[in-house]
Every structure is written in C-alpha cells, then in structure tokens.
Image 1 (cartoon, one colour):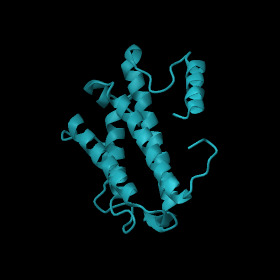
Image 2 (cartoon, rainbow, N blue to C red; image 1 turned 45 degrees about the vertical axis):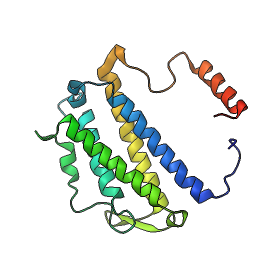
Image 3 (cartoon, rainbow, N blue to C red; image 1 turned 90 degrees about the vertical axis):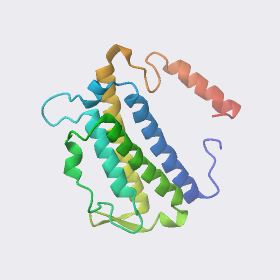
Image 4 (cartoon, rainbow, N blue to C red; image 1 turned 30 degrees about the horizontal axis):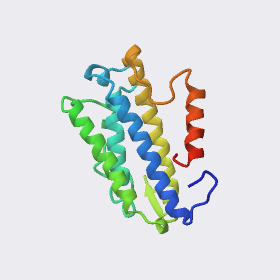
Length: 190
C-alpha cells in the first residue's frame, strides 16, 4: 500500500497496525536483551529507584499477562497480579524464568490481538475499574510497552558499552538510510 492510500477497512487496518507496532517494540527490546550478559541483565544504575533490565522484563511480563488475559470480559488488573512484587527480584527470578514470563506476557497480548474484531474497538473494558474503550486500552498499553522497551534498550546500551550493536539507524548513516528507504518506496517494495 502506498503511503497515502486509505485501507478499505479502517478498523481491520487499525488492529493490524497495533499488532505491527507492538511487535516492533518487542523486537527492539529482544534485540537489546540479546546483547547483555546476566550481570548486565540484573544490574541497576544505582541503589535507589532505578529499575534493572530484569525488573523491566518482570514488570512487563506481569503487566501484559494481567491486562490481556480475558481482556474483553474481566478487569485488566487481575486479582492474581501483585504489581509491587514485579519491582522486586527474588531467588526464583533467574534470567530464564523472567524471560519466560516476558514471553508469556507478550504471547497473551498477541493471542488476544489476533482474536479481536473491528467491532470490538468501541467496546468498553475495565482497567483498575476505570472504563476504557478497547482503542484507548490499546493505545495505553502500546505507550507503556514502548516506554519500557526504551528503558531496556537504554540500559542495555549503557551496560554493553563499545560493543553495542545499534537497534536503529547508525550515527552518521541517516542520509544513506533515507536514500535507501526512498528507493525502496519508489520501487514499491517498502
């Protein structure tokens, strides 16, 4: 589809775009996670309120699982979620266990998105007893996911140092990137 074309079915297109954007931010965070060792995964910048990558992963896994499980029929803040504990690491919180929680949370989101229909977008759901349209809940969750994906990327970049592999356009390569993007669009393969 060309950049200015309107899709035939806007609500279908909107659900596909939400899914695409959530996948983008998960992929960004996954690529950052892949660059850090266990020491960096668990390291905090200070002894205060700064979250480690591990805490961000634990929190996102818990949040996504709670928000998107039985999304249309139950409050997004599930009784079995203990949000405060997502910001504390215990002996059971190995990297493998936290990454499994991360994958379960994202899987719950993507399964739910795949089951939504365009007619659901205007429905009302609850998050902590506050009413949200499905569209607003999607926007809220996407903003939350991008916020934490950015934190994960920043922390991973910090801990990796000179060995960091950029997740976007490398410094000094913007013009080259923009030219290649324009050429792909002109060729119809973007």
